[in-house]
Length: 122
Image 1 (tube, rainbow, N blue to C red):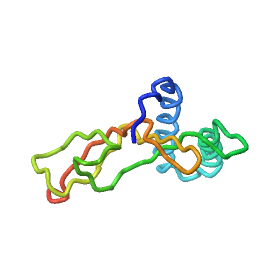
Image 2 (image 1 turned 120 degrees about the vertical axis):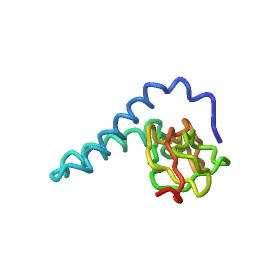
Image 3 (image 1 turned 60 degrees about the horizontal axis):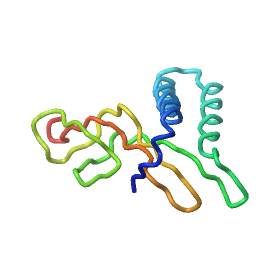
């Protein structure tokens, strides 16, 4: 479910986008352990932004790279690379999916922006 009242969290989304980018770049570095620990702490802060006695409420992001895509997905905005529209998979993530977790439920706070391509053309 996509909620419109997350528009005021644009700065949070921009920070989460930057965390996502740093995390992707870290995958290419060999000695990333200490930086990864700091990134995980920052992600934990976002996950617990509105913590109270009833539980943790906050934002998380999800990297959908490699996942199947079809037009019924509500959590992604996709650009199709190539001519085929069959057996589409996410080949590039421009912006991750941002979700808001509250209690036991999760809402889509912002759709991910991706490029998809047919498995058949690879």
